[in-house]
Image (cartoon, rainbow, N blue to C red; front, side, top):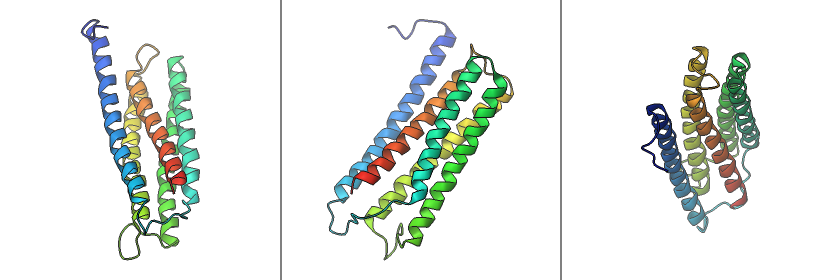
Length: 193
């Protein structure tokens, strides 16, 4: 396939999608590095093997999975010309995304209440990794919420139609990536003792 062929709009569409995927691959590499360091560090003598992840992390996992479903419904609605339903489900996705972040901080509070700290004399390397991985993911969810807000503003302005949904598609792709990334991370932290 010759990527130089096609209209300017088609080439711009391909370029934007490719840039998003370059960004996603770079994020995957960063999290792969942290999870690799987690595995290597698990051989240390001071590694906690019986750590229970906070319940709020599991509830937030269900919330972020649900938010991906609401984003899919929003995208389908707009692709079928139902702008109102699309807007409602984009708003619901935003609420669920914010709820995910709130629950992550509740999880941090639960860990602190159990005596697990990120740094300091009572901290542990495993807990530092758990805090770090979750916090960096939260930062990326904030970026996802910003992209979702941009999509919502464009939706309110009537930019998206069944024929023109590139911005919504890009936002949904990034959001779904964040969802799958968290599911991977929570399973990783749960099973890698």
